[in-house]
Image 1 (cartoon, rainbow, N blue to C red):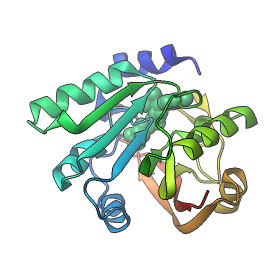
Image 2 (cartoon, rainbow, N blue to C red):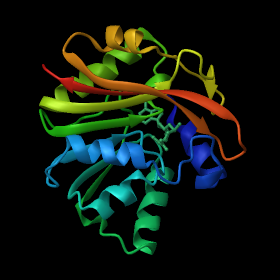
Image 3 (cartoon, rainbow, N blue to C red):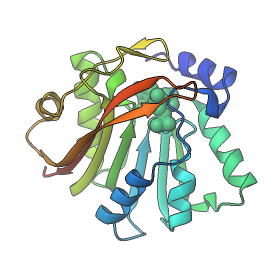
Image 4 (cartoon, helix red, strand yellow):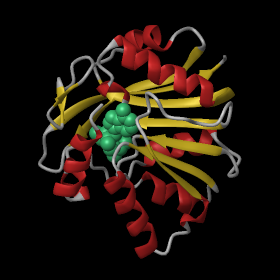
Length: 207
Ligand SMILES: C[S@@+](CC[C@H](N)C(=O)[O-])C[C@H]1O[C@@H](n2cnc3c(N)ncnc32)[C@H](O)[C@@H]1O
C-alpha cells in the first residue's frame, strides 16, 4: 500500500470531514469494556487514523494502548489532540507502518481493533499477510474486533476499492482459529449524511 496516498488524505482533510468520522460509538466502547475487563490489557487499534476511539479508551482507564497507521500525519494529529485535551498519552505507543509487514511483538495483544481497514486488503496476498501479522501478535484467546463494509455496503472508500464481507465470508477469510463471538450490521452516517452499511464482528483467537 502506498502510504503517500493516506498521508495526502490526512494532510488535506480535517478529522471530522472524512467519510469514516465518528464522534463516539458507545456500543463499541461497551463491547470492549465487556470483553476486555483488565485495564492493563494490551489493546491495539490498527489503522487508527485520527480516530477518537483512543481518547475514549484513555478516559475509561485503559493503560496499554497501541496505535498503528500508515499515515504519520494521522498519528501526529491524534497526539496533538490528546495533548490539547490533557489526556495522558504516556501509555500510548505509536507505530507508523503498513500492517501487512508490520513488526509487532509476539503473543502480546489482548484486543486487536480494526474499523474500516481490513477491507482495503483487496488481494489474497494482502489479506493473508495481514492475518499472519495479527496471528503473530495476538495472545491465545485474544479478542479481535473487525468492522468492514457489509456485502451490500459501498464498493469504495476514500476513492480506493474495498472488499465487502458477509460474516461467513469473513469467517472463511480469517480461518478456523477465529471463533465468532458476535456480529451485527450497522448503518454509518457520513458527515454529509450518506448511509454506509458496515459489518461489525467480534472473534476470539484460538491459535
Ligand atoms: C477508513 S480509515 C479508518 C480509520 C479509523 N480506523 C476509524 O475508524 O476512524 C482507514 C485507515 O487505515 C489506514 N490504513 C490503510 N491501509 C493500511 C495499511 N496497510 N496499514 C496500516 N494502516 C492502513 C489509513 O491510513 C486510514 O487511517
